Image (cartoon, rainbow, N blue to C red; front, side, top):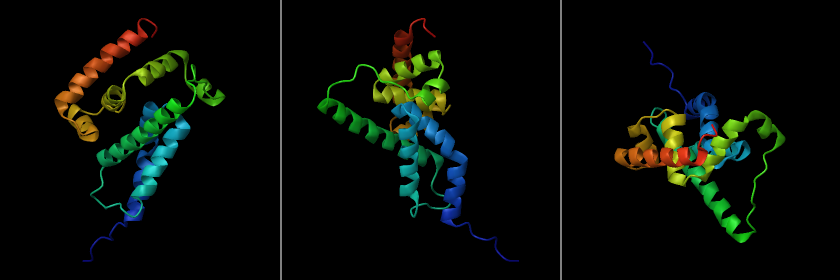
Length: 166
């Protein structure tokens, strides 16, 4: 009896990309604030994984961590750029984005974007992706108690930001 054919790393990476790209882009959108940048972040992560993919070893949690770190890098670059130029008071969405996002959802996304980075990450991982405290802690590389306290503070602040608007 012959052994089953081995799955090549490239084939597994392509299948993984096909299965998880959309959710990873959604994660990045919530972190960086726009779809185009989020797609770039996810594409960069997969480009870096090419050639380094280990069949059966590379996990979704690891790839999510890569997306989180890529989003952090984008946000750091934006912060540096904003310090160098005059601060823009209001960001304008593209017509496509404005049509896709309802007014209440836009308010939630804006309030979410005003949270500190760590609180925003905790909320997105915990509630949008519906990850457990342990999974969130693994991706953020913090303790579970830190996830719980950060999430609690973020929810209080988000509720304060939103008031009765949503």
